[in-house]
Image 1 (cartoon, helix red, strand yellow):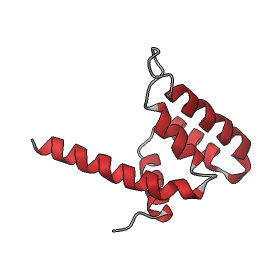
Image 2 (image 1 turned 120 degrees about the vertical axis):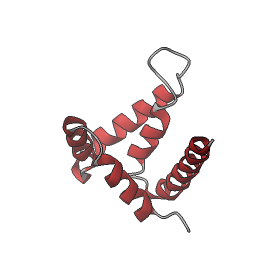
Image 3 (image 1 turned 90 degrees about the horizontal axis):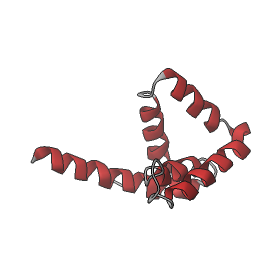
Image 4 (image 1 turned 45 degrees about the vertical axis):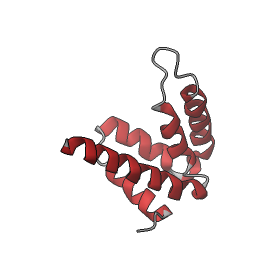
Length: 98
């Protein structure tokens, strides 16, 4: 099955439904088209902080989150992110079977 932008959007919507109400509201606010400047600033900050993962609190977890935010404005990022998510899901499933 080929990863598409629609698959990524569905994944983000599904994951957003599992978030606590306050976090979900913040994510929904950021995903609105009119919030593009704030979303780009947050994405760049998260990606930059992801590269500083050797420092306390900052970590690699920030890099994919920044890329996910950036994918709202750069649709070409969505299929690779969906493929990466599928690879991670498969690896987690294999580890759980052990």
